[in-house]
Length: 379
Image (cartoon, rainbow, N blue to C red):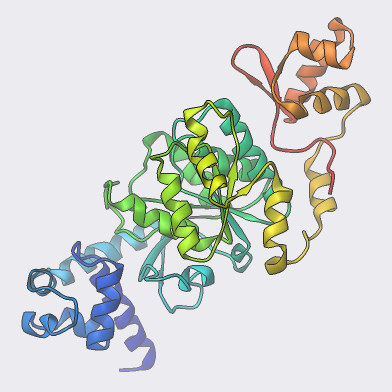
């Protein structure tokens, strides 16, 4: 048997071992280290498995009794049918930042493509029940970073996660979604189109088998991958019990930077962010606050002026006045007229022009806010 066949066999053995529900990352690495290879683990007796330090008799029985050949055949067929990639820890192409964390996922499934430049990544996470302020901030920060060559990582959940992905996509940048279920499951169900867009412009990945459901205990495992892929984690709106704080804690354990966007002091959705700031997270108002911390690792923003200018449509002087007035936050038409001193009859056509150019967006209550792309880039 040649080396290529041996490698393929061991790669498949890793996949088969990863399919056993009782085998998490810790027990996976423990078993492979104890017996020398994944293939040796799969073919070992219960007694031999029990000899591995930290492996209980119940876990040994579960591994020894698992019908891994049938499960492996099914999984390989699904992977091929759906056009997924599989990366094993130690393989070329396995994300370098993720490989450095404690107990990296042994196997990750990928839809789309992970690129070398994705090593310059920032994770943006937050509440599923986001406010319009949180959505706007997540889109703005992710878009500003994407314009500067940063890959945005998040969990494709409702609220802040989805806004972070969309901000990166609208800026023309790559983004990576990490799921708490298999790639054959769309969760939440309304994010099918978003998932396709992410895969076309980056990657959707998971450590779970293709049809694994979104179980509650999967999401903390997903969160450690989100932070592990990134240089830092930005939390935008999070309650005290938010899962985003779990991601921030993983980031601290992994030696990553932690950033938090402040909100209203009376808002429950901002309490988690304010707590993070109190204990040392960097208060973050825009991309500059993040870049200041990661610049020693990645250097200065490359081709910022070229990319940002290309992404921003040209504005007439009156439109610039409106965009500048929205710097402080969303405003209604009457407030915009008062701040810009533009004629009321002209304001409606100017707002329509800015909406069509994608520079601003209309919010509930007939108010308007800046979208993620800055109209005039200050670098």
